[in-house]
Amino acid sequence: MNSKKIIFEIGTEKFPAVLNETKTAGIIYSHLPIKSSVRLWGKEIYFSVSVNIPLEDGKEIVEIGDIAYWPDGPAICIFFGPTPISKENEIRPYSKVCVIGSIDKDYISELNKIKNGQQINMKPLTNGGD
Image (cartoon, rainbow, N blue to C red):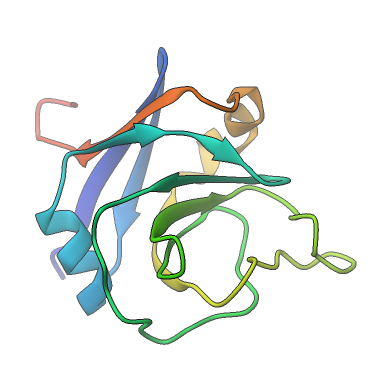
């Protein structure tokens, strides 16, 4: 398996992640680096991307640490807890998303420090660390 390692840089914080083997993840990876501005929606970070991809294997509920492509944005979403429409312990996106990977679980709590409007850079993680 040749998983694609990436890193999100937000301010001085760095969040390593791995993309899965979906078509959508491959298309997103081919468009890296992507720079945008962070938006927050509950415990979800999302940011606009200029990539339009049809929904692949849409999910209504995701897991903590999931990275997803949201075609309605279009945007990339990073889920680290409940959203405003979550019920009980679920994590519910605004509408269906395609899960494209996951952020390193050791960094989840650090996502709480991120603020609306911060610049985000999503890029491939090279062998040198970044």
